[in-house]
Image 1 (cartoon, one colour):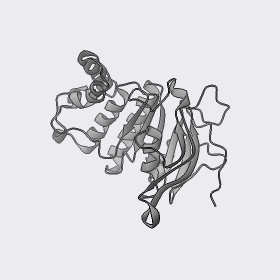
Image 2: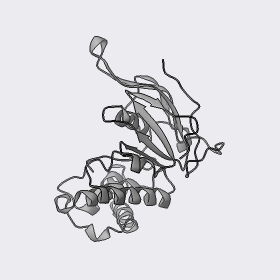
Image 3: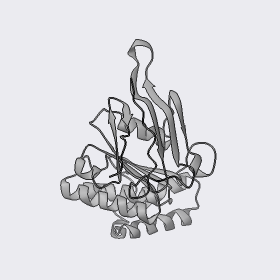
Image 4: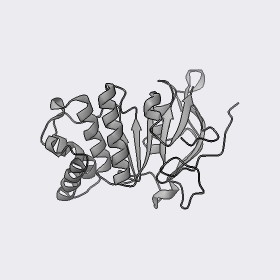
Length: 243
């Protein structure tokens, strides 16, 4: 039996308060299964939560607990097989766009043949932004994160920490309402991981975005305002979830 608590309504510092606007994301009994019949694997069971504007949330749990699958559902990159995921606070119907929700993956997912500037501009170009606008927004994001000196570098010339900072720049270039970071420090040493979390928090503040970071590192989780947990595909939001 799954025990559900009331979804957390959190300010940027993780403090509970009554929301003043529609949540950015609402999951209601959202589940995701892969396969069918006896071979079906349930990655997420019956998840219910709200993500409010300005939230700072750590999503913790071991590898294979369903964190990535839940983030993909929240981002609109995947569809639930049960329940619903909606985005009432985005101001338009349907799935989110790159200007609504941006995702930072563990690997960075940079295109090897493109420069840093081109990588950061790419999602905007795919969203039909004019080339000059996309490059201008990309340059501004690199400057904001103080890595504009890397603009003409190729991904193979970057350290792991630099590549993740570029991935954060790519995420914030569109001015999203929500940033989802999926184990962004999983392959980094402690110093590089600390810098990436610094950058994520600073970038989310700069563009006034909510931030959800999945991690199995308690030190990183402690830096976010609230802590939600995944265990065997089940989302748990404890009472008094404030950090």
